[in-house]
Length: 600
Ligand SMILES: *[C@@H]1O[C@H](CO)[C@@H](O)[C@H](O)[C@H]1NC(C)=O
Image (cartoon, rainbow, N blue to C red; front, side, top):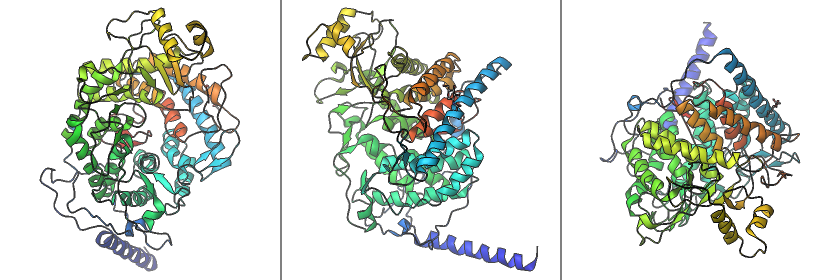
């Protein structure tokens, strides 16, 4: 090596050391020993990345420099990890034959082709903005103006083998400025799952070879960490970014949605594992300890209500419970956090205690014409006095609740529970029923069904269905038959509360998970039918559009394509047809935006 070059290398080396020391001595609080109820040993992360210095001189505001008003006085460390103690998750797949492979590859190409179509639409019309509007070609900034679709799509690009596009996108990511925001108030949960999850998933799936992704994740993590700077360290979930930048006093909300405060664990934990900075894990573990302490004190012990008081750290007073919107990923993250921590006793217990109550109070069997033995998660409310065995579940099925089949299946494998595998299958069959028995091949956002009194014996009773339909539309004249026609109700559905299909992933997500767990080839066929039908009705010249009403023949499109279409829905359809070792569930957990984090 020539001398000039060698001194350059040496200079760079000392520069790096300087930045490294600077970062570690000034921008982090002094750590105190961990409290005794948490194991002292820090987890060895799977990769051993170099610590990434935060570069101070790029002219941008530096979130790492915001002084904490309420710094933690003791740091909760990552617990000891033993991922090998977790049983094998995926089915042991047999070799496919040439014919099977040909069909599979054709389908894989069709999914990829549609992804590329929408990606091109985003690039041409909305590059570096949050979303492309798939009909008008407008660009929207609903998520802070930080290129949500770009960040959310990174790992899908990699998984689909679009490496040039991926590398271009990684370069573009460096220009995202998290110190400026298009909104006054951001949703901390959405920012965490889409952006932080997007960076971490892309970093992990590409084999830790693109350090700028981890740098960006750290930058965002440093920003989001400021939302936890409240008197009781519970985060502000709807967060006024500009006020926070000015260092104003902030408190957690007294009416936080339980999913928004309860499903930050995977992303913050992975960030601590990769950076070796324990603050992020500490921040979310404090929240989960409150969930843990109050799990048996809620109005339905085992479950947590939809709304919690974060300001008072009181998570047990509200009456409404669901596995659908506003609560969903709280439960989803329990078995996944168990895996990410390499087998954590605490999260196993949280999940198992929740599952007892979910099975008893949330799951219901709808009465169907074909007598299908299926399940949906419904809603329930409790005054706290009625015995939990006497509560009546409202037979409302949300598309958002379709994640449950995948969650219960994953938990059944991780915790070796055959009975729960049966529940998982019935939940997946529930959402498949929602798609397959509908008029247009879509399960809408929210439908109402007729609940079976007996989960084991439930013969079809047309009169009972019609009576229920009548009850749902008391103001309308005409017979139940008329109402069924007017409202396009398939047999067994008593009302469609929300008829949209907005490109959501939850049904295909659970079908994918169940396929990887069981290897059942019929799931691939049914997924393919769902896919072709979905594409046929959503495709536009620019990308794909959600449907304002998926229950009527004309299927009116809406001018929106949320980033989860590329991050989740098309990724899950693609993974249905890859080889099973692509994003193996034995190596990755997927966050609630389908971003893969390595756990084994
Ligand atoms: C999109 O998917 C459909 C199948 O539903 C397929 O026929 C079509 O070729 C795909 N588009 C592209 C551009 O690959």
